[in-house]
Structure formats: structure tokens, C-alpha cells
Amino acid sequence: MKKSVTIIILLLIAVVFGGSMYYLYQKNAEDPVVYETEKPSKQTIVKKAVATGSILPLEEVLIKPNISGVIEEIYVEGGDYVKSGDLLAKIKVVPNLSALNDAKNAIDEAKINLDDQKRNYERQLTLFGKGVISKTDLERAQVSYDQAKQTYGAANKRYDIVKTGTTSGLSSAANTLIKATVSGMVLEVPVEVGNQVIESNNFNEGTTIAAIADVDKMIFEGKVDESEVGRIKEDLPLEITVGAIEDKVFDAVLDYIAPKGKEENGAIQFEIKGTLKKQDSTFIRAGLSANASIILARADSVLALKEALIQFDGETKKPFVEVQTSDQKFERRDVELGVSDGIYVEVKSGVKLEDNIKVWNAIEPEINSK
Image (tube, rainbow, N blue to C red; front, top):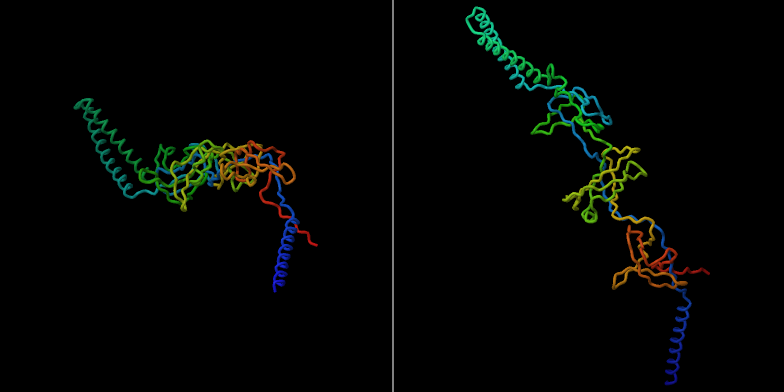
């Protein structure tokens, strides 16, 4: 019985020993871990924030009438260039019945007074001819008669203005003639012949007859998220891309950041504006949607690495890379980093252009099929 137990134990020891030897053999037979490497490169790295918005004129003037009425004629259309004082449209006045009636009554009253002063003047003239009154009395009667004629004429002009918007002698200054107040391009004419328009006054902004702007002075107007506004400042350069104009980048300068944000769709947005540099060859239409890249930092033709190659010390949090010294052997080197665009990062010191930098992920050996 003891002999059988001894044999079993010896057999178990032999099996365990054999399995251990086979495991060690298989372990030693595995291919070593292989790491890929990449070299640094020369890159132009731009760190930027992106804003969405549109292209608008720096100054857009809305032309509004000083009298209410109906559009009788329109002399311009969108895209036309005009100078200050050019005629844009003509308005036909629709008279107010109450004002028209008051003006008609004023004519009647002025005519009655004029007839009375005329009779008095003729009477005084006869008496003066007979030597009954002095010349002073005659002159006084003549002044009253002249004033009555002037009042009657003014009442008639007032009636014409109420009825037609103009009168004889004032046609060039009539409120019915809508003229450009600035020089530039007509962006739009939002009215048509026959449309009613309302005058601009203290209680009403009035109907817009035309919008005029200098299209040589355009701005980008957009919005940035609150997470980005802390990184930007005025006078930073902008690169504007317009969706409707392919393969073209327009330079601009950030010159306004709103001091107060507004909530939109649950996020706080801040308005920004940037003045575009004058473009002689490309015409940019007002209202086109655009994106602005706000250049926060820029490094031209610098030594750079992919950010994925950078490691950070667990204790000091300082960046480092592993540089190949021989076949699959690497040494640690601390590096000084600069501008990053999220893909590449500038390396100011620590590596050279000819160095091979270790890629973290090892390459799994290929299994040859037999």
C-alpha cells in the first residue's frame, strides 16, 4: 500500500515538473514586444478658437420717408451704386381728410380777410387822394393788405402740401422724393410700387425704403461660447472662411468682444466683431454665413511631435518622451513644449529632428500560418 502511494506521488511530481518545463519553453519561444517609432517633423502650428457668424456691412443705413403715403415710383434696385442725394423713390401722398378739411377752411378764412383788407386799402387810398388821411394811415392799410395776401398764399400752399406732399417752388425739397443720405451700394429695396409706407417720427421708426451700405467696409459678426471667451482678446488676428466662397481665406482683426453674454439653447454666448481687410478681387455679399478662426498663438516651421507621443510623469506631471538608443531600447528624455493645435505640439527642447520617438502601443507579432 505504501509503495503504491509513493509511486502516485512521484508520478504527480513528474507531471508538474514536465508542465512547468513546457510552460517555460513556450514563454521563451514567444516573440519579444516590438515598439514602433516616429520621427519629429517641421510643422506650422496654429492654436485657435472657432466662432460662427456672418458677414455684414460695417455701417448699414436704412432710408425712411418723412411723410406717409403710397410708393408711386422706384428708381433703384439691389446692387445699384448710389451717391448721396440720388433719387431712390417717389411717394404719392394719401391726404388725411381732417387735415385736408382744416387746410381748406384756412383758405376760406384767409380769402375773407384778404377781401376785407383789399376794400379797406382801396377806401384809404381814395381818402388819401382827397387829403382826408395822412400817408402814414395809407401805408398802414397797405401793410395789412399785403399781409392778408401772404396769408392767403400760404394757406393755398399748405393745402397743396396736405393734398399732394409738395407745392410750387418747393418741388426739389418735397418730402415725397426719397433720396439717398449716404453713398454706397443698395443692399435691398423691401418695398414695391403700390405699397403703403409710414413716415419716420418720434413715435414710429417708419417704413424702410432702401438699405444702403459701403460694401468695401465689411465685418464678421459672430458668437463664441463662454468656454472660449476667456482665451481671446481684442486685436487678435482672424481667418474668415465663407461657405459660399470656396478655397478663400479672408484676413480680419478682432476689435469687439461683448462685455455681456446671452443665453442661447442653454449656453452663454458672447458676441464678437472683426473688421475684414479690404478685398480688391473678391466681392463678399452681405449676409453670407461664415466661420472665424481666432488665432490665439502661432508657431511657423517649428520642431513638432504628435501629442500622442508625449507622456507625463505621474508625480511631477512634466512631459517626456522615450527616444530610441538602439534596437528596441529607449531612454527617457524630458521635453519643453510650446504651442499645440490638439494634434501636433511644438517641442522647444529635448529631442532632435533625427531622433526616433517611441510609440506607446506595442506591435503584436504576426502569426505565420503553417
